[in-house]
Image (tube, rainbow, N blue to C red; front, side, top):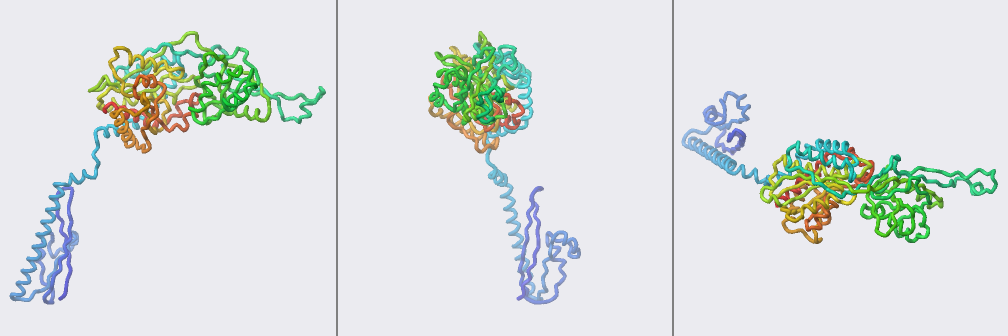
Length: 585
């Protein structure tokens, strides 16, 4: 027998949006040989074939005709033809049944099949993604508001008009926008009022270093006769910034030799040399928590061994000739001496001279002072009231004040702006909240925290109706968020509800902002939430990629041009997501 393989293509339409195409291969046995007969009847009975004489039409439909050889006449020929037709009909019937089954399955279960590959998104996840998207869309708007704030209200030092006017402007802007509930000022009294320039002398702080040149040969520098060239005295002016809370020098300054030490321990070992001198703590930056003690306590260390003034290498890992200020402290019973900071470059220079055996005399001029009376200021509060538990409060915030050398864009205008914008994001998207979410801008974080103390006092005063469940501060700059640190009042684990809410927030931030390394961990908070922590409220602090934060911290370089809009927006979105998760737990 000879076998001929031919193919026909059948197109079955199911819906306007789908079709199924199948190919049929039929193997026919020829009983005889001979020339093909007229195939018109066969082709015309094919449901997808065109006229047999129209070859172009067949080609357009990709149809290959089924060709039969001549069958012998008689019973065998008729039976053969009938058998073929029966087989063809059975094949077509099977195809139709199969196609119908596929279409039925597709129609009945197609939608289910499609959804099975798409994860179910919860309303909370939808809200988190919407908050992140809206925040990034508004990144430039957030940055522009921060720029206006820091440009028009720079140097927001405690007790100054700038600090008070900044608070009033925020409340006015909130009221004009109309998105937040109850924007208001909370009066704060007893704010320290320290003045860097207590007189009209400008600049208020500086020092002059004088030392003998060692560039001449020894015999010329020590020659006894008057005709020998005089030993030149070199002089260099050094930038100094008074540290917050320090007393000043007399108007004529203080002059004394410099003693350079690298630690408190070295100072103690050289205590006999320190009496009557100006002590310089040249301590390189390791971490802020470790190094900052020489800024805060250096005057106490130096005064204990009889020094008449003290200086500290600026607490920063990098510098371009920018001294960094900050708060210092005195101790009861220890003499108060002037305490300032110099640049890392000048500190390293004085150490080099000291190690080379070159004596340096320093004349120090500092014209700072504390006002006779403390001043007043304001905290700023605004909120979105919870629908089910409005008297349970979640707090997010930053501090309103800044040091006076620059505009405080990172510390902490950006943190304040992130909290403000976080609350506005929740309002714009009308995110459902069970508990109240409140934004607080605290006054006077830099010089003692009187704003935070007043907020906590009012929150826990007799008759207070609200209960604080969690408080988060943003005071580490507004770089890319890396996590959230939390602390409980007893140092132990959080309650189960809050722990679950923060764990959920971790996942929401990771997916919504694509921050795969964002993590929630124990250990965190901030100066302004510490008074709440003492009252038993769990607190947290936003962690960011702060690699360059201390390059600008408390210096004239802390300006808005350093802030990246998208990073500010991510901080705002993170605070919004965290507060939403806790409020709805």
